[in-house]
Length: 274
Image (tube, rainbow, N blue to C red):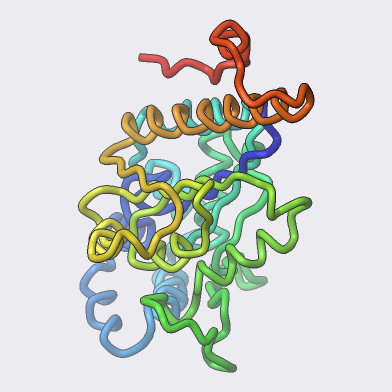
């Protein structure tokens, strides 16, 4: 068990295997309207406008929820999340989707309790029975000021800074960050040498990191699909657990080295199932 590991997941194309906005729009048959609106305003504002169009055209909250509940997800993602949670890791989400989508999907998948915190764009059902979506950082009032490739409504790097500053003993925690999009590049730059980033291979964050990997201080471990995500994630958790136990024992006993017999006695992470 380890309470020293904080694992931060993106949501779209990381936990789920598609973009949640595009999935909902396409499944409800509003793709053409979305494509017309997209050049005229920021993505976050377009999605709030689309929710108004859904409501005006008689699409109910229940219909939206049913579409979200059948969103595609790789079959090894849920076991990976449950294993990490069972090992005592602190799991969090930082996502440019929205709270309504994420909470609806996590509840349906039965893994809401695995996450201690969700940071995303506000999304809720108002008194008129329509979903409202607003920006995490209100760019209509002020810019978040980040010079990286972050969208105007969310700098995930600033959110990572907030998480580090608000969790107990944040400087001594070991972080694992997983993501796929360009918006996941900025947070990848915020971690230390003892941390890990897991960019999805051949996705925008992977391409950005590959331009100059030396800018990322954390260890980089790419992944392709849910099966590889699970394998690498469990391996990294196991690695941290062993390292932390070795350090604890060495410090407590004032030893610099340990025998192989001691190492073999250390707790192991949960095995990756078939």
